[in-house]
Image (cartoon, rainbow, N blue to C red):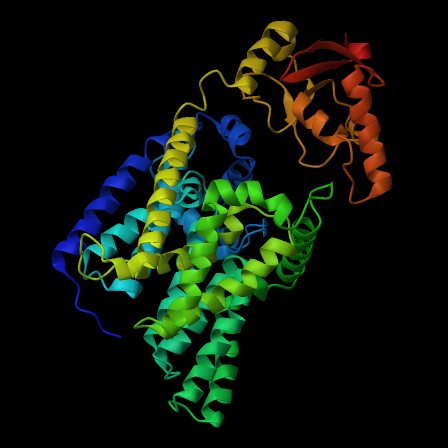
Length: 522
């Protein structure tokens, strides 16, 4: 469907994008003085950054460089994310700024997280209104204000790319106009890249099925063409999945990828060491803070369903809903919920709110449009709540280094341990505790639960344990994925909380952390 864009509307959207993109630089410049600081605020970022730096580290020859670039050996996310992120770092490597953590993290957050989201939102606005009316600006600003969008722009993670690729798949399926032609196969290629980035691309099965069935109903294709086109879609998707993850061409790369995928699937369905809650009751606090209240969510679903029967673009709204349903069921009921998991389906659904506003602004509303007035009121109230939530999120991000408990705790560690900070000690620290490289320690952390076996095997001289982590694993009613292993971990944390770790002496504790030192070293 071709739409004639309004140049002034388009310029306004670009202007808003540039201003907001620039404003994101301020919160994205914080919390990045060094890798240790990145880790205490976003452990996922700290896990990714060294991998990216290794990918662009110069090698003896070009072939070895390409091998190191492609086989990055951290397959929790696919190559599209790591490859593009590494390309962002490449100029910093050439300029000798690869270790400039504040600058590299700012660039990565802006280019890999913020920019793709902006492009995705603009595409959604175009599909809904074609950049023709004031509604485009209204919808764009509204989508930018969703707290989940704000939060996702404040860290380095694949979900900005996932949102963009999801929207691009929707766009090309929409643009194909049920002809099952070139755009249909572009959508399949993008779906393969999306699946390579993060496996959520597999949830497009319903939207693709709806497209094929709609094509048959409109008699734009025959049964033979529909079956062949569906088979080709799967083939093209699989081809681009492999092409986008070139390490899969290696046998050991495939084995490691599959092993990692199974591990990740287990984490998502069960939890990390302990059983995480699932279902509406456990996800509701996150859902409400990041996506809006119950009335707003119900109204969003109502508008999306009604739009199928009462809009100029019934196929587009059916397509969005078909993409929304499968992934929503999965992240709501079959995995523990994190706000970014719902982002690629929630934001397209939210774009349907544009339908409550007339193409030409009219005020006041007439009496016969009471339902529209009610929906507009819900929209305005939720928008206001979004803005208030955004202020809190951004304010917290801007000031997150100030009086941070973990950073202050490290200052106490230096005072208490004194000269020992310059000794070659083997030190364990919980990853949420700030431990930079201004010491002579051999440092090690773990994302797994601790046990006596782990600590004794490693022969740590010093243990820096986070109090909150101890209390998290000792709270009443918590269950371990492996009950026997969890019992051992709880025994370790129980002893730590009581200050009675075998082989160690507690020399300091406060509300942030505990310092244990090996008995024979004291």
